[in-house]
Image (cartoon, rainbow, N blue to C red; front, side, top):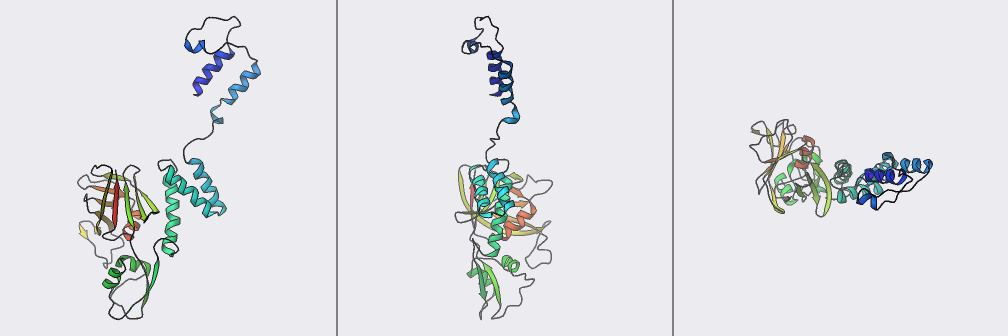
Length: 282
């Protein structure tokens, strides 16, 4: 558009005083006119590239969100971030918008203010950790994390600790290159897919989490082992049977898997349990 406008300006302003027959169709629709030097300089100044407004989708909303965050207006900033994430998911700023929005949501999640409710549980006679996690749709790993527990061999009636039901769903969006965690219809956080060796599919596939494992080399690590927290976490999807793994320098093509940052894998494995629903969008 800029080049075409410059061509038009040149032909309009620098035509000879003696009218000549048009050389082509473009010249036939652009009358030759003489203009002052000032008019020419004014037009050329308006055509400077620096003066063209920034029309990159989503960038203005993201910049507005950052300004609002700096001012402490978190509610308005969140709305701007949601706008970028929803309407411009492939924008340059979209990954950072998702990260900030996700961190805000995680703060709410673990404080019990929104999303899953934090339950204050009092141990009753006959309780066991297995019975408690089964009855509350949660898992022992999260119970230990929420209550800063190092061992599970001591449980007495009257003991109190916090529980969180894990009924989240996972969305694997291959088109947007994002794995995201949802509480029903509400978005919680998105995790960027760093690499993928994933089977092809069509439309949307509904499946579930088959297993969540911790591995150290070829060895599976149990929850109560001393090296559990430092072990690599792996989420196994039921159908197609693929894995979500922490990113490594070299990705194996022998395993059908998605790869996330190691810190993202730690978080997502903590907040999922066997049986959680999974949606794959191709």
